[in-house]
Length: 375
Ligand SMILES: *Cc1c(COP(=O)(O)O)cnc(C)c1O
Image 1 (cartoon, rainbow, N blue to C red):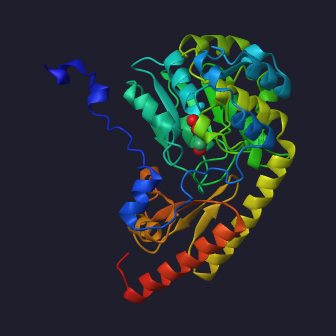
Image 2 (image 1 turned 30 degrees about the vertical axis):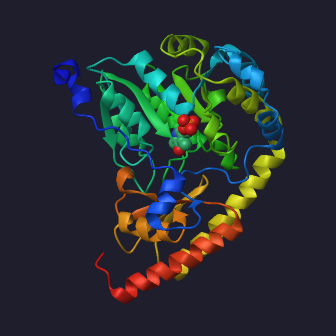
């Protein structure tokens, strides 16, 4: 069998993403007796109480029955919450699935997408393994640079992806900046704004993307239940757009991809989120303050702001720092893969975990400086 001959060129050259190993294997490998997950921006509070109850009470016989193929009830609820028709919402198996649906819906080989070089990499990856050129623009002061993106647009540009706030830098565009960008980008291409962390932001200047769709019908927004709503393990995210755009994206989406329990839990989470969001924001704010102060004392540079994460510049290679922290039970995200070599990203969690992280980080940094390990 000539397997190579079967593979499209753009797949042949593409390297699969390697997910981290299960926690129990990592603990054995690093000799850690426990592991605090500071690597995936998960919410340690767990889902809102109503969602937790739905998950705990899930009837086993329901597992035998297919889910709603288009997340009907959840879309009704999301539509009501957003003040738009349910048909303007498309639910996916995590927002990663809707990224793929949008690219398949609008791009063919020869087309391109434009996004930043140091951002959530799934836009770039899906484009590349689909044979679509990903045009990457440098950040400016750690933020998406609107002019750099506009400069890369040509007649083959189908989608512009803006991660707002940006993962991993925590910067975001305001309503004004987004409106300026949309005006200049023109209507002949889709502008996707990924708002995976929007619920962490309490700022009147943060864009009202749903409201802007009337003026800019090419605008599409992504949201997820993985972060604030703490349902990452159930995989549920969605996009919202105009009726016409969503109708097109639905053609390239897999029906029945969102399981019953995920749909039910997301629905319940949405209806019980007030106190949950307030409590999570407080936890993140306090955790941020603690870690930023600790890094200042250690003279380590940090970059962060919006979202439940913070980047820290490490005195040694990020992979070496990761290994040192793993041995101490702290799992962080190395940033070389995000094109930030020498940085780690830390998820902000409850104070006791952050205090323990700060103490371990200080010990490791002191040890490194005393050994004068080369950077
Ligand atoms: C975590 C994250 C997502 C969410 O992915 P899901 O597939 O919904 O879990 C999307 N975009 C960004 C920027 C993220 O950080």
